[in-house]
Every structure is written in C-alpha cells, then in structure tokens.
Length: 365
Ligand code: DGL
Image (cartoon, rainbow, N blue to C red; front, side, top):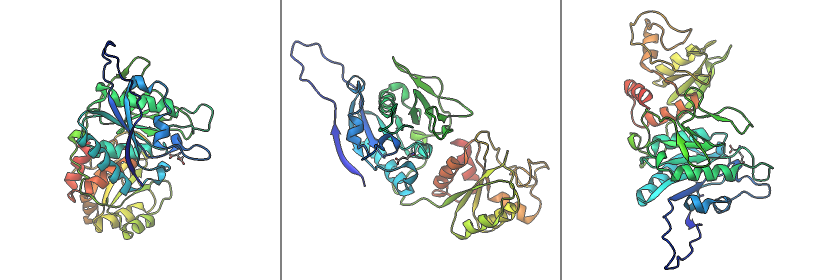
C-alpha cells in the first residue's frame, strides 16, 4: 500500500521585513519502505515519524515525505521494485527543483533495492537509500542519524551524477558495489573491492571517487511500461551440489540463472548436466563468484584455445555441440555479486534475448 500524501515538515517562520534574507534550503523527499529503521516495538514508525525524528533537519533541508510500504526488506516484491522505480522517476520528473530523494529500507536486502534504483532511475539527482542496524526501541538506535546523513547527501550538489547511493554509519557507498557484510555490526555495509565513494562529515559530504559504469541518467532500462520481470534464480556452487535443482528451476520457468560459482566460476557434482539442460532449453546462464569479490571475465569465443579455471568455468574450450550450445547461452557477471547479477539479468532479459547484447550489458553496467 502506498500513501501518496506528501507532507511538508519544515517549519517556516515568516521573516520580518527587516530580517536578513535566509538562504533557501534544498528540498529533499523521503520515501519510506520499512525495515529495522522503522521497526519499533509496539508499532512501526511511519514516514512522518521518521521525518520528525531528526534533530537539526531544519538546517539541512526542507523535507517532504510519503509512505510507500512498511515491511522488512526481504518482503519487498519485484512488483514493488517496479512501482518504486516508477514513483521515484515520477517524483523527479514532476519536481525540477527537488534536490534529491531518500528511500528508507531494511538492511537485509537493501543492496538489491538500491541497485535496482541505480539501474532504473533516469535522473542525475541523488537517490539515497538509508537504513539502520538497530531498531528504534534499542539503546543506540542509529536510524535518525543515518537518515539525517542520507538527507544531507540527497541535498548535496556533489552527489549528483553518482547513481543510487547507500548511506549508513557516516559512509557513502555506491549501490553498484555495496553489500551487507555482517549480520549485526553497524559497520556492515562495505564495497569489498572498490571501497567507499565518500563520507558524511560534520562540515560536509566528501566524495573520493565515482562509478564509471553506466547508471541512472545513462541507463537504457526503462521500467515505465514494464509490468513484470522475467524469473531469474541464483544457484550456489558447493561440493557435491547436484544439477537436478538446476533442471527443476528450468522446468519451473526460470528464464535465466546466475551461478554463484566457486572461485572464478567452477561448478561441482552434476551441476554441469543441469547447466547443459538449461542451455538446451534456451535459459541464459550468468557466472558470478560466490567469493564476494572479484571479476569473472567474459567467455572466450567458441574454438578459442584450451585452458579454463576448473570444471564448468566459463572460459574452458567449447568443442562438443553441447559445450558450444552452453557457450551460446553463457555470460560472465563481470564483478557483480550473484544477487546483483540477478537484477541485471532480469532487466537485460526484459529487453533482449541476444547473448552478446546481454554480455555487453554486463560489461557496461
Ligand atoms: N532486518 C530488517 C530488514 O532487512 C527486518 C526488520 C523489519 O523491518 O521487520 O528489513
């Protein structure tokens, strides 16, 4: 359920004619979706509660807000991703003077919502996803502090053009790179390979780097008319893992699979049989790594030289018809972790069934 009432919380004091002109504060809009940041014992905090929870907000921005949902992040559906992306695009399109948007989320799967927005929002203004690790009934609740920092980032001209951002614990990470690395600690959000984009300090928001891959205003993914996303499942590789699960996913209607491969993409047990079956049925297979970091290079063209990185690795020689067919449906995830490779594959498959196009997308985003 989405409540579309937009409410202003900043208190305006009529300026006396002799008072010096006050600089206009940037305007930021808050879209609340739920999560631990709202999960107070005895009743969840609403968007209004959150908007009123930040001491010092009146020095940072004028805030409007709306309730999009109020659930744990793992309960957010793919339909809600599409609705949320459309809503954020609509908010930007209808309000040219808005500085940025803050989206609250539970932290468990925050990186997924954030990456989806990174790929589907067509505006250079910042979309900042914020959550908290401690709930409002816990001593040391850091939600209001994270939220205020998120508002400051959304209000910051320096945040423009940097894609969707994740702000917790005084750090700004890119939605592309960030992942939750600890179940409970406050310093859980990390970008393992590339590091933070910036920090939120007492005086200002400081950026140290930016993302070179395509996103937001340069993204080709248009969710305006998309009513559903194709089914894509993630399959973990572990010793003794069997291919029957892969066959079952194909038979259940998966249009794509992401393999969370061992090391640089190795599979195990009879998983290769399952993947051959997937390719026979025209299901695209994206190889990522389960290690949490590192890049999987795109497969070599068929007939390319021998080599490879283990059984089932995407770079081995493709000599038999089954191997060649498999190669025709194989894509590398580049440096995307499996859950983000899934999001990119869903959006890619909504646009194309051409293998080279899908690999291009993985290489560009
Ligand atoms: N850990 C929270 C999340 O990721 C769930 C808490 C809740 O909102 O019920 O969404």
